[in-house]
Amino acid sequence: MTDYPYNPAIAQRFRGFLPVVVDVETAGFNAGTDALLEIAAVILTMDDAGFLHPTPCHACHVAPFPGANLEPKALEFNGIDPDHPFRNALSEKEALTNLFAPIRKAVKESECNRAILVGHNAFFDLGFLNAAVARTGIKRNPFHPFSTFDTVSLAGLAYGQTVLAKAALAAGLDWDNNEAHSAIYDTERTAELFCTIVNQWQRSNGGFSGLTVSG
Image (cartoon, rainbow, N blue to C red; front, side, top):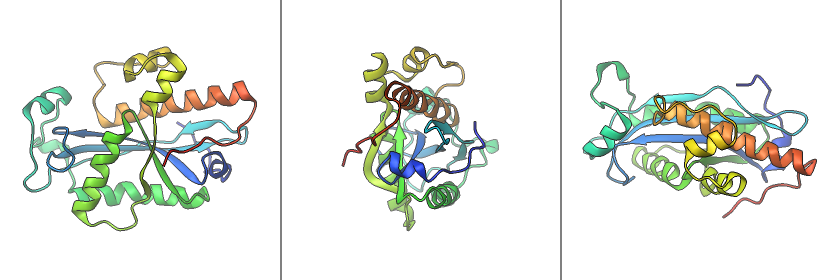
């Protein structure tokens, strides 16, 4: 993790968007009906040479919203017990409010217009994020509502791998299967993967002309 200050140059690198890596752990695949259980975010910053670095992770355990569906197979897969007393879970509104505060601050200090979600299968994470925002009525969501950077596509291009664990190993990063499928661990590894791919491009091209953001 880095102590680099937020560099306004990152705004030119990504068309006014600040990349923020997000991972969610859920109780199913349907963002409208299934519970959001964990959410984590890593804000990225840029050094004076134009290389990206992750900052410390922000994360919350989330209490299932009233009436949320809890799929047993999903809970078995991620190992989360929604009722565990030591989770210290926050309501969706509290969790998102806490998570969005440092992101909004970073967007402002980086002189960006808003954040853009970076994720592995990013549509899944953004779908659950947007659904929780809609349920809670939170205003000023810092994220673009539909544009993303997806490390599945980027890792497929860079390394011929689309599974996060295999892509991380192909990029020369550490991977611990015992830690996987927690929001914090997956977010930190995805952030490292995204930075590695973008920085590799930076080294190969001796600079940047700006990545094109879809949408």
